[in-house]
Amino acid sequence: MTSNSARELPGIFASFGEARRNGFLAVKKLKDEGRGVVGTFCTYAPVEIFMAAGLVPVGLCSTSDETVPDAEKHLPRNLCPLIKASYGFAITDKCPYMYFSDLVVGETTCDGKKKMYELLGKIKDVHVMELPQNQTRTSSKALWLSEVMRLKARVEEKFGVAISNDDIIRAIKERNLERRKLKELYELSMASPPPMTGLSQLQLLFGSQFKFDHRAKVAEIESTVLALKKVIEEKTSPVPAGAKRIMLTGCPMGGVTEKVTRAVEQSGAVVVVYENCTGAKQFDRQVPETGDPWEALAEYHLAIGCAVMTPNPNRLDLLQSLAERFKVDGVVEMTLTACQPYGVETSTIREFLAGLGVPFMSLETDYSQADLELLKTRAQAFVETLS
Ligand code: BJ8
Image 1 (cartoon, rainbow, N blue to C red):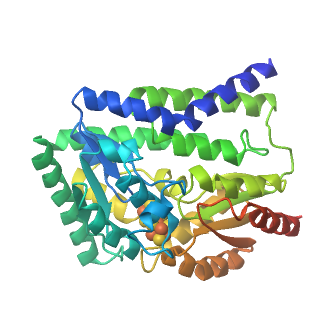
Image 2: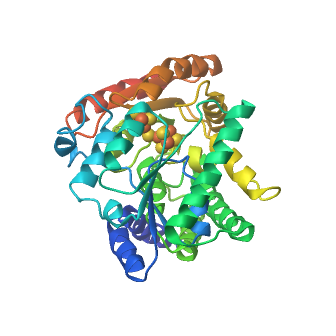
C-alpha cells in the first residue's frame, strides 16, 4: 500500500516541474484561439483584473542567466539578475511568454525594475502601475485604488472588453480558490517530517503559475494534496525524521535559484516553508469576498509585505506566523546580488528573528552556477549550528 503514494508522487512533481516548459505550448494554443495574454512581473499585479476580462495572465520573471550577457549591453552589470534576465529574454525573443504577451504590466517597485520598464516599453506595450511605498497612509491607499481602476480602464480599452462588478467578483473567487488550495498544499509541510522535500514544494509552487486551465489546475493541486496526505498517513516521507526545519525568505525563487534549497537540503535539513513571493507572501491571505470588490482587491495587494515598502511590518508578521506554525529551527534568506530593498532589510530581519530566538542566515547569490560550493559550505555550517 505504501508504494502507491510513493509511486504517484514523482509523476505529479514532474508535471509541475515541467509546467513552465510545457506552458509555452498551452499559451500558444490559447493565443491561436484568440485569447489575449498579459505578462506580469510581480505579486502586486492584480491578476484578477485580467482573469475578469477573460485574458491569460502569465509571470515573466526569468530565472536563468542565459540572456544576461545580452541584457548587459543595455543595463549595468551590477544590477539584480532577475531584472537583467527578464529584460534579456525580452530583447532576444527567447521567452515565448514575453513574445506572446499583448500587454506587459509592471509596478514601480524597486528602481531597477521601474527603469527597465522604460526600456522594455520600446519593444512591448508596457503599462506601469504607480505603487505607493507605504501601506497605511490614506493617501497611499487612495493612490493604489486609483491605479487599480486605471489598469481596469487600460485593459478594457486595449482588449475591447467591459469588466463588470460580477466579472471581478468571479475572478476574485477563482483566484482565492487557487490560493487556498496551494496554501493547503504547502501547509502539509507543517507535519513532522513533512511529506515532501523543500525542492519538491518549490517546484510545485513555481510550476503552478504556468498552468493556464484554472479548473484543471485546481483539480491537479487537489490530487497532489490527497497524495501528500497519504504520505503522511502511511509515514512514507522522503524526509528523514529529525531533519532540521528551515524557512526560506527573501527574493522570489524558482529556476536556477533552486540551488539555495538544494544547498540547504544537501546539508541534511529540509525547507518546510517559503515566505517569499514564490510561496506564502502570495498565497497565505485571501482577497475579502465581501464589500466593494475593487477596494478589496486594492487593499489585498497593497498589504503584500515586500521589502520595497517602508516600513515593512507585514513581512515581519508573516515571518513570525510561519515560524510558529511550521515550527522552524532556522531561517535562511536568499537575496539576489545588487537587490537593495532586500539587502538593506536583512539587518531588520536578523534583529527581529533574534528577538524571537530563531537562528538566521542570509545568503547572497545570482543566477550563475559559480557559487554552488560556497552556498553548500555556508548552508552546512548554518545547519550544524542548529544541532
Ligand atoms: S512583491 S519581492 S515580486 S517586487 S530581487 S527585481 S526587488 S532588485 S522581485 Fe519582487 Fe514584487 Fe516584491 Fe515580490 Fe528589485 Fe530586488 Fe531584483 Fe526584486
